[in-house]
Image 1 (cartoon, rainbow, N blue to C red):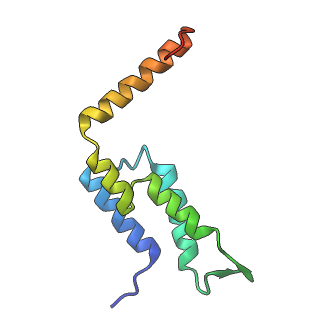
Image 2: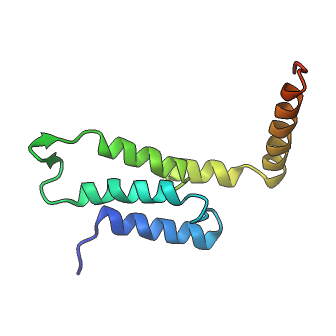
Length: 108
């Protein structure tokens, strides 16, 4: 049986998220690539010692990328729990607020 790597598991998660329509490879491409670099770093031989230094930054950075992509259980639940209507209201509300701010109106 082949050894499972952080990178292979990440790729599986991304592929499933794309298939489910939760992730867009074009829109999220830079974040996906950055997370792949973090995953590859954690897969290196001898990690967490990299070039003689203890790497305590990569795991937390990788986790933040996964959260931003909604690939963690908590962020997946939050996205799934929010109804489409609420997402649309939030989007419209944000654009209305920006428009009002641009016109010099103060929002109460």
